Image 1 (cartoon, rainbow, N blue to C red):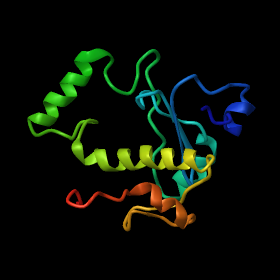
Image 2: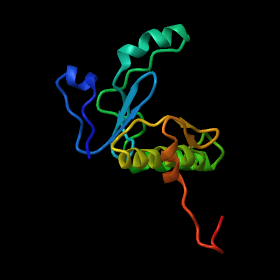
Image 3: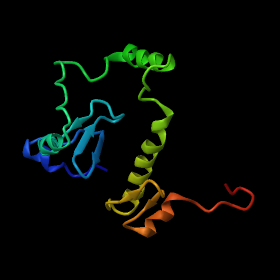
Image 4: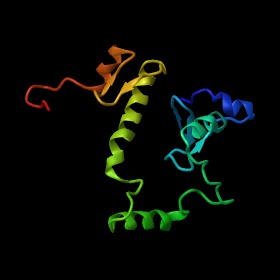
Length: 147
């Protein structure tokens, strides 16, 4: 199931890749590969006024032919080792598991509802705009197997 191409890609006469992720937020869209690799802000022009208003720096330009992380397995392993030794958290940090799981589960609920847009309240773990959709977030457990 492939969503329609965003206007930003259509304006550049581009299409979505066969696999990947598209995150649509209130202030922009992020397009990445199947595992989230090589993320790119596809509505960057609409973000420039927002960056200036919040005094945020422009993103640093990428070196030609290189991704944001070191390429290959060695780069991923090096980040994990630095994290293990007390450095900054790696992308595999367990603290990221909940929001990532929430995003995937909400995408599945949206697909069950025909691709409808869902508004998520993470503090209460509820879908706010379609209350009936919350039934897909839990299940009824058999007696003796309750959580």
